[in-house]
Structures are given as structure tokens and as C-alpha cells.
Image (cartoon, rainbow, N blue to C red):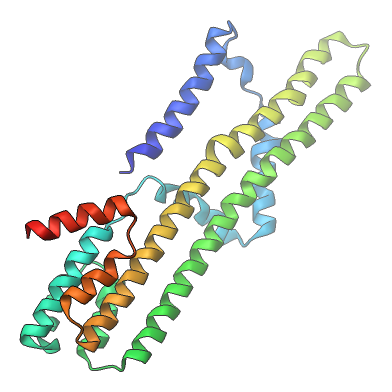
Amino acid sequence: MNISTLIGLVGTLAMCILGVLTSGSPITLYADLPSVFITIVGSYLGVITFCSIGDAVSMWSTFGLAFKTQKSNEKTVITKLLAFSEKARREGLLALEEELEDLDDEFLKKGMRLVVDGTDGSVIRDLLELDLGQIESRHDTKLSVINMWGTLAPGLGMLGTVIGLIAMLNNIEDKSALGPNMAVALITTLYGAIIANLICIPISGKLKAASADESLIKEMEIEGILSIQAGENTRVLATKLLTYLNPITRASVEKEMARD
């Protein structure tokens, strides 16, 4: 589990609740059914208008991805590719076939299988880059749904505020109606801000960063696979792969490689 997502969401919500409690107001004051209908349900139905019902439903599983950690990282990918390179140079490309069954990374497995099958390097690049492009396109689609909800929720919150103010002004002589109508007017805005700023914007940003990291790893894998297919020296491959890393991670990997 990605603990930072959990800490961030729970911590932010806890601080909001703590702020309410320390102000002396009961938490139930901020529960309002009309505001739920207008802001939460209304904005989600707006998401369904924006995309397909399937994409709107799958948005919830996309949120769950923010709580998961990536199975592979730059260090493990570099280590695996260098091991493949050394074995291929010692025993030949066909010797890598037995290694592929234990691979959890389907993208890397696909590329290495093409290498073992003797596929031309340009064909391998085209196929893998096409695969990567489709992965990035799917990620962008999922992120656009979350971003749309984050955009619509504050707008529906403002719409609820207008509805509440109209009802309040229309019944301004009825003092018993002022409180409920004012609650709708303000709480809808609150709900919209919560959806956008506590949920959609942080999670969308996290998933976007995770998508960029995944794309970087797959670009590394493409270069590594093509290097192995071309029979390049393992040290040349290591130098090439290290250029993808930021200086801190690169220094750490180089230190580990020096120990090995």
C-alpha cells in the first residue's frame, strides 16, 4: 500500500474535522442531504455526461490505484536488464527464454520474447512504442474523468449556493426557512471544495506522477531490450540506462553496482 496517500487523505480530513470541533460546532451541522444531492450526486452525473457510464464507474477503481505502489522501480529494472545482457552475451539470446517465465513485468516479457524470437530491432521498437502509447492514452483517459469531477464539483457547489440564496430571499420573511436555505447555500460550496481539493486534485496529481514514472520505466525497458537485441556491451547498456535516473537515484544505483 502507498502509505503517503493514506496519510495525506486521512490527515487532511482529520484536520478539517478538528477545525470544526475546536470551533465549538457539532460535526452534524455540516451534514445536509440537499447539498449531497446537488453537489456530490449532481457533479457525478455530470461526469457521466462527460464520459461513458463505464468510465464513470471505473473512476472508483482508478482512485484505488493511488493507494498501490508500483511493482517495479528503476533499480529493479536496471538490475534485471543488466542480468539479461550478461547472460545473452555469455550464452546467446536463446538462453534468455527460460528466464522469461518468472517475469512479472508483462511489458518487459513481451519485448524480451520478441528478442528471443529473432524479431528485427526496428519492429520491436515500433511494437513496444505503440504499446506504450496506448498505455499512456488509457491513463490520460482515466485522469481526465477524475479531473472532470474535480472541475464540476465546485461548479455544482456554486449552483447549490445560488439555489439556496434564491430560496432564502424568496422566503426572507419566514425566519424558520432562513437557516435551512442558508445551510444549502453554504454547505454545497463546502462539499464541492472538499471533492475538488481533498480528493480529485491530490489523487489526480499522484496518479499523473505514477503514470510518468511508469512511462519512464517502460522507456528504459525499450532501450534495454534493443541494446540486448543488438548485442551491446553490458557496460554500455548500464551507462545508457543510468541516464534515465535523477542524480540521487543514479548515485545510489551506481554504488550498488560497484559493490556487486
